[in-house]
Length: 297
Image 1 (tube, rainbow, N blue to C red):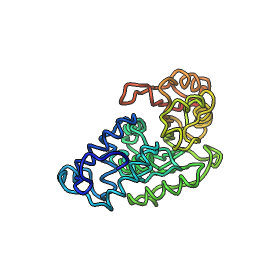
Image 2 (tube, helix red, strand yellow):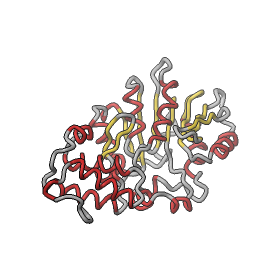
Image 3 (cartoon, rainbow, N blue to C red):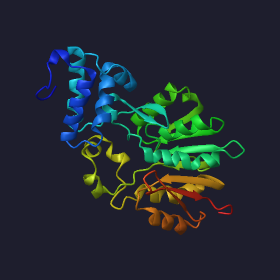
Image 4 (spheres, rainbow, N blue to C red):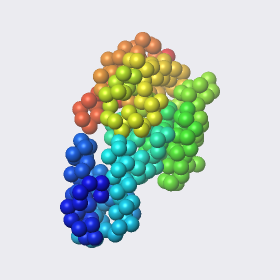
C-alpha cells in the first residue's frame, strides 16, 4: 500500500485493506472514505460490496493488492470514484460513466421524481430529454413508464454514444430516439412534446473554482459551466421550450439552489408559462422548477 503497512504484507485481509484505506482517504480529506474504500476494493476484486463483509477475514493476494493500490492512488490524486470504476448507480440502475459525461447525482433523481405524476396520467406522451449526458434521466423515466415515446439529445457525440450504450445495457436502446444537437438547434420547428426535461449547466463560471477538486479537474466543464451568472442555458431553454410544448405541456428543469427567483422571473418574462412551481431536493434546497405552458400561449 502507499505508505507504511500495519501488518505483514503477506497476511493482508479484506478488512485490513478497508481499514487502512479508510484512514488513508480520511487523512487526505475525502468525504466518504469508508464507502469509497469498499467500492474500490470490490471493484479490484471483481465482487459485490456485500461480499467484502461476508469474507472480511479472507487474505488478499499480491496481484489483487497491486490492482487495488493503483485504484487507491488514482482516487488520492483526485479522480472521481465513478470514473475509476466506470459505473454509477442512478435510480437503482447501473450506468456506465466516463469523463465525457457528468456523473449522475442524487439531486437529479429529484428531477425524475418530480415528473412521474405527470407521466402517470392517462394517454401516451412525447418526452424530450435535452442534454442527456449519460442518458440517466431518459433511461430512468423509460424504466418507470415505458408506455411513452422518448427522445434524448446531447451536443456531445461522445456523451450520446455512452448514453446509447447505457440504454442498450438495460434493453431500451431502440425504444428511445437519439440525436446530436445543441439544445433546440436540431429540432424541427414543428416538433412538439408533452414534457421537456433537462439538467443543464447552471454553475456560475467563477464558482467552478470553489467545487471539489475531482469535479473541477475531471468532470466535463461544458456540463457544469452556466456562464457568468449560471443562467445562460436555463435562460435559453425557458425562452424556447414553449415553442416545442403542447398546450399545458411541462418543462422540468434542474437548477442551482439559489436560482429559484431568477428562474421564476425568466419564465414570467416570456408570458408563456403558468407561475413556476419550485421543488426541493433531498437536502432541502430549491432544485427543480416545473413550468407549465399556458393553454392559450
